[in-house]
Image 1: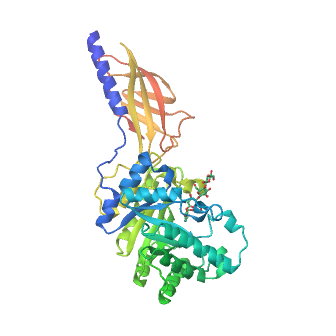
Image 2 (image 1 turned 60 degrees about the vertical axis):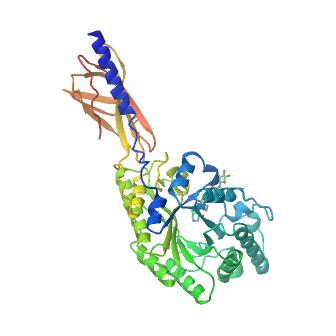
Image 3 (image 1 turned 135 degrees about the vertical axis):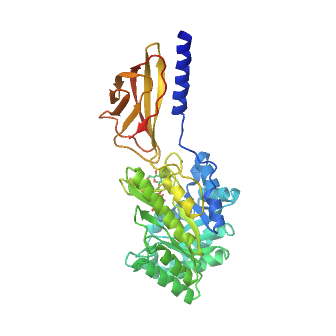
Length: 447
Ligand code: G3I
């Protein structure tokens, strides 16, 4: 009898352990986004930080994407923090990583009103000095990476929301002509690089995108080198512009390429399964709009994992904006991109929270059990776990949860202090119970 019980106990332990070790599907066999994109004639990219390009982050950046955009490393304040003193370390590192992984690089960005070095923004410059500064900056940076950059965001965010020109150091000093000049200098420094003007809130047809459209048309009429427009696409959950494809098409019809350059889709935190499902639909819609227009050549996300995104620090209470969660597990959004690129992978069920039951110690009449509720790509503010005992087990005491048992049916709800399970986190509760004969592990349901 005793040895029988010991055997059953071991079986229960193994079964419990097996349940505990059930991890979210890794989907390692899914076709990488870069390969799905290639089959559709699309380059799929991500913004990256050089120092992070190791471990899982580096593996995913290299395997999933065919283009990298330095998130900050090529901005003026990064490359020339003091006048005449250059720091190319991170930019060089990203370019080398891209070459080693057969990836394109999108250079970002040469002319902007943000992230300029203090010596530049605090200086007082004549128009002639500004012209020299800008020409030298473009010549130096574009020249350094000549032949290694597929496309440059030459001018970033030149417009106000109403379509007027943004008053910047460059506009105020040089007038609208700074744009044509910058493009011309960039072409001279690397004739092979595609030259873009890039902006946000220009994804749908609106006053700002129409101003961009008119700029591109006028540049082309004047023979100024312009190859493409970048639609940043920092979007809000459920608000993909209905005119996105139409807008991409009108730029294509002007004779320029289009790139989705900085895609992310933020939501109010915490995320839940309904929001993640909406986000999947949104990512799929954006990707599908690019797929539908031949001249939409590149779809780049602005960071691929929620833990690396700029969103949470900029929009308090919002986040979860990227295709991977903070543990580098693909979210439904990832599968939205994959499906729009023709992928046939089966996404994991939305929701992302699971409960697992384990048996700790067991003795001749009783045992200690535990249940862990884990979330990945989702979160909970309260929880309840239920199961049905199959062999007459009876709970006698529980901690870190309120448990009731009616017949074989057990229901355990969170204690007042542990209802919250964050994305990427877990909570556990424990209990003592009696058993006799056998102690099979029940199937638990998180509701
Ligand atoms: O490097 C410093 C670090 O030393 C310091 O400790 C830390 C403290 O705040 O700041 C770090 O610098 C931050 C930098 O990112 C690098 O992480 C800056 O504060 C922060 O403002 C900066 O934010 C960047 C933002 O542009 C600035 O406008 C984001 O990373 C970058 O993703 C974001 O990218 C822009 C695109 O270039 C253009 N379109 C919009 C997009 C989102 O804002």
